[in-house]
Length: 273
Length: 223
Image 1 (cartoon, rainbow over the protein chains, first blue to last red):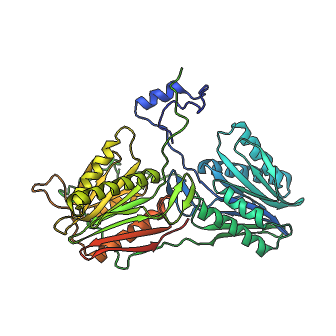
Image 2: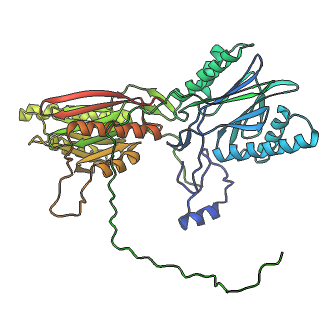
Image 3: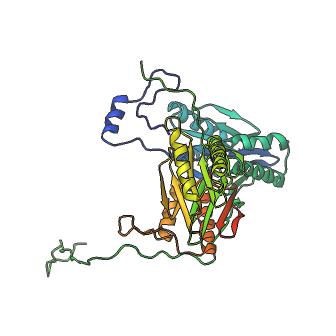
């Protein structure tokens, strides 16, 4: 993250930031907060009976792992799930928001939600924010019109694909898909391929890691396989353990009872019904 | 016109962490073997540890091209010393040499964060820790690199570093036995690789004691 307050675009140009305000804040010691990005590998593919989504489970704050087992496959509707990469707050907020909108829509129409509905709601929202809502999504589901898989970019563009990958590990995962994907995969073949692609991201991309989550969506229903594979157990635990002596000495103990603010009046009237 | 920013940097950070712990008659130096750039792994089996003299070993993290150049420079100077003095350089002597070599490039530094470990002239363990431009200090233990912020607080807690403000000056050399120190190093790297994306793959552990130099490896998380 650049520490300069005024972020000049790399090749020069106009800065659209609130420069004077940022400078004033920086002088007062208030620095812009860094945001937690998921630095992720997310994938989706269409198989014989529906859609399979996959994701890793590492959330990073710069070079540090802040969550070793987070959930990146978000619920949108009973038949639609969405994987999110980019800024964690953005992916959570936008998927929760559209999920609620879909539920209201279901009540209004009396019908099962369609994937294209979720797609349009998401892309409209992201386009309105001109890319500032940093959410890159892989949306998949099965509805009356069949299985669907889409990718949505932070600026609001979408693609409809038979297999897709997003996030910092997308190249590693796509390499696996491009080699091994074929149409008409069975459920087990599909799960295996998705797992392999996510593992490729986990081991070759530093922004992705920990476990593999898989979600299988078919006409009959959905199966959310949380931590389907856990290829990264802790490598070493000391057999003798470690003790942590209390280093802070207690110098003085003083207890001050708080005065009761409520005065109890004896013999008051009973409360009226 | 706004101040021009450089659009190319001569440096890169290859990540990784290193640790050294000094004991009464041994010194443990360890580093992970992952070399990375940005979000990619260049190799899982790169040694960041270099033997400078019989009783003196250096581990460096940072920009490995600069580290390699620094190691070559020190090796050459050591060879000259051996020709002139007919003996190997002692660890404290090598420590001073490293400091001078780093400061020589004060205005275009070696992007190299070093820990030097070994036995001093009396056979007691010693560890020296450096910054990129040669400021150094003899300490009981030290950690450098991307995982150092995760490792150092734990070492501080376990190795009970005495306050440097106390007089007489107390040595921070740990009373732990060699096996215990190695156990500590393994635990510390296993923990660091859980939370630091640049630390992982394998640890290379080098132990310097009266019998010589010994090397061992341990597997770490590969994600």
